[in-house]
Structures are given as structure tokens and as C-alpha cells.
Length: 432
Image (cartoon, rainbow, N blue to C red; front, side):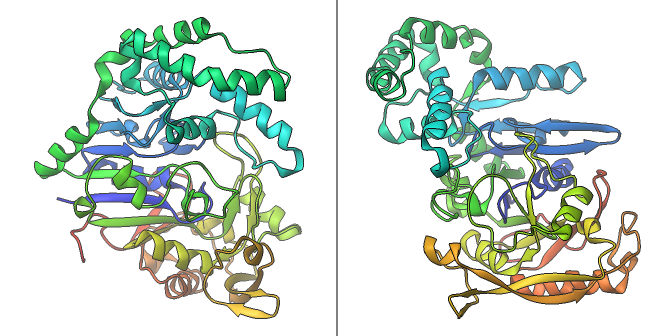
């Protein structure tokens, strides 16, 4: 049975939680394989709205085993806050598994993240200040803390001492901050050990066993393609691999276990934080998209920058992820526009680019080349089949599919759980 990867095909906030929820009743495990609590999913279940940050959104589906895999960095305080908040609302959180190889966000990671952003000033990256980048930096520098370490105080203390030996010099001498105390940090992390122990396992073994038994496993990316550390708009990116390849390294399953890759993409484009954004709007149309789409970050609360659909980015996401399917969300937001522009290529210093330039300078200077499509006025929030869409909305979807290079298999037409038009089966064997 399939291993399915679900990724964001823009800069995040595309509605991956909705797509995961759509698949939830058909999968046995939902795996978060990258990132930390710097990204959010909003899932609406009936009259209830759930904002998840660290936990995979599959935790809301009864019978599903949610997994935080080795590629994630974990803020343990946030983990327990989210678990307790869901339990208080009647959600069963007892099935959660956490990889012992997942890295831990220590208090000093959050401190360094915040003071570094302030120090950079105008050159800041636009991080969430939650310690994600510094935790990944320690992982690559081989001075990171893993979940397993919390069960051996001697190892934990030695690792924290080694990490803080350099960091305290940086905090005190460069940032003029107080040094971090080793004992306080050890105690802060050790207090979680007993509660963590039952849920910490080798999740690679668990996931491969599930696939061997014919179960469906969904790998859910945090962040999105254009924020990937290797394939995003560097340096304005996250610190992990949010593309489909990250599902393999971030979970400990081989690439031959993946059968399909679903990209989630808005019917327009948004971005939070710093960095270039070719189709960004600064006029009343941008304000319209922001208001109609309720465009505020799930994790940060920051207003999202809004722009038209970018088919260049869609094609790029299709290529680097090997997408088999696209789920287009928030088509309903475009209702009421006379014309809907779509970016089909870029103009970079007078030269047309049909593919996304990965050179930072070229992308920064990219100007969108638009094709205008007819808009529609009809309310489409009740549409449940393609035939329910007005002709102009249907034509818009058909145009996006042709321009993006990947078949569109579902369309979101509203925030409600069932406000979606299924077109093709999202769980299918390789090559179908």
C-alpha cells in the first residue's frame, strides 16, 4: 500500500492541514518529518477550529497514529502544551510516537534565535524566533541534543556543557547578554523525561513495519517548497528540507517506499516573512485577497503578503518534488473579481524566464508576466463536483492545471471540512 508525501507547493500556509484531514480516514500513520513549531496547520472539524504547530494534523483523525519523526526539532514545552490543549477538548492523543533521534530545542536556542534577528536588523531573515534554526545548526555542527539524551543525565549534561562553552561567549561578548547556566538548562530538560519516555521510540522501525504490513502512511511536510533550505528562495528559507526528499531522510524510510507526492497550492499566492515575492500586490486587490482569505499566520499571527497565482513556482514545485497530484485550496476567495491574473513567466532585465531562476539576484529582479482569466461572481462554497462550478471558475482551474504541469486532484472551496471537490483519488499506487 502507498506511502504518500504531502508538501506545500508555495511559501507555506497553503492549507496542508485540510488536505491531510481529507486523507485522514484512509491512512494509518501521519508523519511530520521536518521543521518544528515554526509552522502551523489550521483544521476545521464541524464547528471546532484547531490550530496545530508541532503536532501532525493527523492527530485529529480517530485511529490514526501520529508520528514526530527524526527530521523534526522538538520544543518539549510546546509539545506538551499542544497535547494538553487537545486532550482538554476531548481529542485522543495517546497514540503519539516521537523519534528518539529527533533533536531537542533547548531554551538557549530560542534566546540565540531572537537576539540574532535583532542583531541583523535590516538583514534579518524573518524567523519566528522559536529556536528552530539554531537547533538545526547545532544538529549539523554535531553539538545537538536528541530525545534519547534526556534519558541519560550524564550524556545530556556533557552535551549541554559542550554546546554552551561556545554559545555563552557569543551571548556575553557579542550580544551583551547573560550567560546561560548549565545546571538550569539540564534541570529544565530533565523534568520532561518521565512523561516523554513512553512515547519515544525508533520511529523508522515503526514506519517501515507499517508499510510492510500494507498500511497507508502519510508523510506531512512542515513549511513548504519555496522555504526549503536547498530548493527555496535562499537565504529567506527555513532550516530543513520541506520538499518531498525530506520525507525520506526525515523519517528513515527508503525512497522506494514512496508512491505518490501531493502538492498543496493556493488559488493565489501568499508569503509570511522576508524575501522576494514576484506576484506580491500592494494595492486594493492585495487587500481584497488578504481580507477574503483571512490571511494571518497560524503560528505567528503575522499578516501574510498576498499576490496572484504563480505558475512558474507551481512548475518548479512540481519538478523538485516529483509531484503526482495538486490540491488547489481557497478557490472561493477569488469570487467577485472581474479578471484574475496568473503569472505565466518572469521578465528578468528584459529576458523572459519560463523556469524559476535559482540565482538570488535574478529572482529578486523578476517581474511577473501575466495572463488574465475571466472571474466569476457566483458563490462556490457549496460546490462538491466540478459541474457545480460556474464556467469561469472551471476554466480557471483547467488553466492552472495546464500551466502547472501536474494534474489537479482536488479543489478547496471553503474553510469547512467538507468544502472540497474531489476529482482524482489522492491515494494511488506508483505510476497511476
